[in-house]
Structure formats: C-alpha cells, structure tokens
Image (cartoon, rainbow, N blue to C red):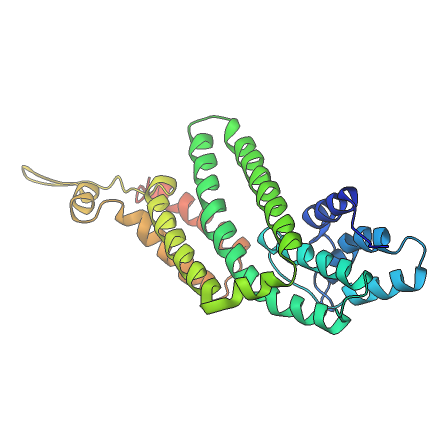
Length: 270
C-alpha cells in the first residue's frame, strides 16, 4: 500500500519548523534538533507501527543543519517529500537526503537573509519607527504583525512548494547560477532601500550659528545646500564601520547615548 503524508502531518511539520526551528540552537548541530522535531510529525505519520524506521529517520534528520528558516522552509518540505518516497521503497538513501540538505541550506540562507533582513525587515522597521516617532503606539505593533504575516505566508508557500517539487527542486534552484543572480539583485535593492531610509529615520542636525558683523553663518543650512542630510549619513557610516570592526552593538548604543547627551548640552548637535 502506498504511503502518503497526511495533510495534518504536513501542516504540523511546517508549523513546527516555522515556530520552533530556531528555538534550540547549539554549537554541535545548530538547527539540527529543530529540523528533527519538525520532521518527527512526517516520520510518525509514515511509520506509525515501525519504531526502528522512525528512530532511523529521526537520527537521519538530527545532523548539522543551518539556514534562514522562512525561505529555508523549502528544505523541510523537500525532505518530507523524499522521506515519503523512501517509505514507499524508492531509491532514496539517507546520504542523499543529508547531502541535499547540505547543498541547499547555504544558497537558501543567502536568499532568505538578503530578502528578510536587508529588505523586508528594514522597510517594516522604517515604517514602525516613523510611526513611533510621530507618537503612535501602533508603530511597534504594526511591525510585529506585518513581519509575522510575512514569515508565515512565505514559510507556508516555500514549504509546500518544496514538498510538491521534491528532489527536482534542487535542479531548478541551482541551475544556471539562478540563486546567485537573485541574491545579488535583491541585495542591491535592499541597499537602495536602506540608503533611502537613512535621512528619514536618523535625525542629526547642528544648531550652531555664528555672526560676523552683518553676516550670519548657519552651518546646517550650508551642509543642506551641499549634501542634504549629510550629518545623518556621516553618523550612519561611522556606526557601520565600527560594527564592521567588531565593536559590540551594546557598547555602540551606550557610547552613542553618552555622546548625544554631551553634544546636546554643549549645543553642538540637536
């Protein structure tokens, strides 16, 4: 009799991966435990009366694994399809499954991190911060709701796409350097969005003024006439370079607060 993963088991597999795939990181297996937990619903559905096969499947899925969990949801979907084929006696080995996971986790992490971290999260944070700066408590609430909706929709779509495509997804994804082109294009778009958000989310101005006889010198107006929002850009570049050099974000935040207080009291910055 042909074994087919039930809709309930597939739904449980996707939801477990989406919700808890990253909750049990460790240095030995990274997301391996979360991956095995998610696939446990699939394996239990395929081997309800075969404890040995179930144990072998869980051991197989407990290997080292690490990716971005939203776009990377395609991988547990593909693996669920392969486990279904294996349970029906098709020539799918444990090594094939693990090699496929290893081959896909990096490229999909590249796509997921680029889209999620560099594009979607930046845009949603920009909207939320702008609303919060205007005095609206809906800013952070809207960010959480929209980001959760994005993660659930994309994760659900990619998981079931992976399950439908099965092992043919590997060929489709890796053919002709498709992933590299998509990642580069999205990365460029993300940098454009980030650049556009700098002058709207970072507010740095100087109230300094000087008078020489009848001549009034206002440095802020001069800076705006040369390069609008130059001070926010300089602040962003300095913080970015410090982060690249390995300075901890907490130290940067404390130092930034201290500098802002001193500069404000001295009347250098506003």
